[in-house]
Image (cartoon, rainbow, N blue to C red):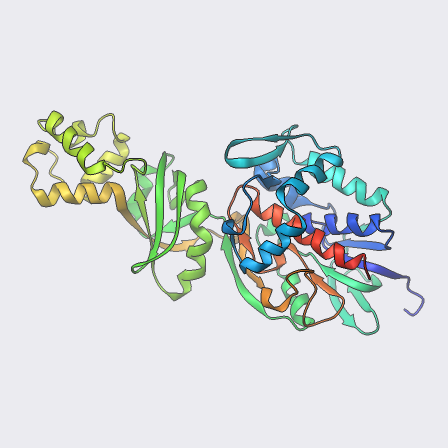
Length: 408
């Protein structure tokens, strides 16, 4: 193996952070090799944004991430939103902005992001070998990398851009954690993130298929873990939709310690809710429960509310006891369900946990445990909200690592 060519940079993983890092290093005339275990590169890019690729967000900031704030600040300093937007436009990608600052390719297809990025990397001299799964790394004067398929490669610098174990059907794998651990890093146990939630209360299945605009609050006892507002989708097992997905990471991190509840407020925009409902009671108090809520709640939600709150169906609302009335108001603004699990990895768009961020240089993403090793993207213990934030971190971490690598 002494006659193996020595690459300046070897990148394991042809995902978002790996491809962008490869392009930047290749532009600086570094000899770059990318090894990808899958036959096709960038499969998670292709699946992101429901196949449309929500590649960044105009509102990107550390507030949208669970990670050391200093790490995200550094990444965004290297590669802020404006730089990201211009970067892909310079690659020939026409972008469009949608609601909440989300940016997509104008074609509506994720290939419009992946292909220009991959082509630019190859045109600048980077080599890409697919179907090569790395199983062993040895650190000597250089890094020696061995693949399951019998390949051996050498490099002066190594980038682990292997991604997380989310979406195993789209190349999600545990292998990156094992490789990082073999080089001295500690791993924070991963858990599903950006996923739907399974709840204990089986009656929620009566709402299957319904969508509602709500505010969600996740609690462990009296502690508020996370809050979000937006659309929730009721399923036969629990809660999905953007609002639920955006609080899932905080919940899955806490579940091993005990129960977590999710409270639904069906009237998040009404600060005068009690007065609003009292006025409605004065006007429609002669009606029974189901008719009283007509025009206010979906009838399936009304029916579940009647059972959940123990409302007597045949008594006019004006005859409800103060306790019943107050219980209904409390339920409509804080209907609690007990989360018993996150949905499986095959349904998780991201992961909590990963390589401990405290073990990398926040400015360069170089390992503090192994000189010449860089760790980027999903493999790190970083997770963001949905809306393009996780992809933006992948781009920015790959870009930041490249800035250090091109100096080597």
